[in-house]
Amino acid sequence: MNPRLNDLRHLPILALLLLSTLLAGCGINNIPTLDEQAKAAWGQVQNQYQRRADLIPNLVETVKGYAQHEQDTLTAVIEARAKATSIQVDASTLDNPDKLKQFQQAQDQLSGALSRLMVVVERYPDLKANQNFLALQSQLEGTENRIAVARRDFILAVQKYNTEIRTFPGRLWHSVMYSDLPIRETFEATSSNAEKAPEVKF
Image 1 (cartoon, rainbow, N blue to C red):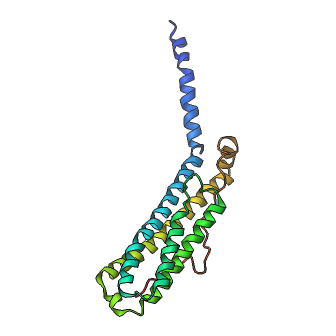
Image 2: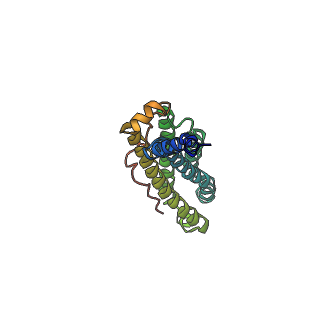
């Protein structure tokens, strides 16, 4: 067999490898990569809110032991927690602005109820000195900080994703291959001073 013909048989494979390298280098994978990063960042937001929700029953029980006359405040916290945990926004509903807004509002209501509970705690010095309560306070403060960081990371991930599908060459790849991936909503502050983590002081 002619060696030149043998070399020509490998030409399609070489062309395919070259084309794959060029496509990978020109950003064809950027959109799905950034989409997955935004979803992962949202997962972290949810994890931190769930961590806060998991702390609340212990917090309420500890407060209840010292502040039995504050039933209305404790009930408000429990109800706000129930509402906040009932609204879930996962990867399949992340692009629904109404669902995201409902989630944000429920979390804001829970933050407000927790703030009112902390005001009540000021009236009970024995409670403020309780070791279990102090441990919960520390965990809650840490969680509020983690929520702020997770929200910031999600906002940045969404910004990168949205920028990619609105600029060249991402805009081209989006229209040709990824038109089913929409511009994503970001996590906007819906309450006053929401950009700051709530202060938890006792």
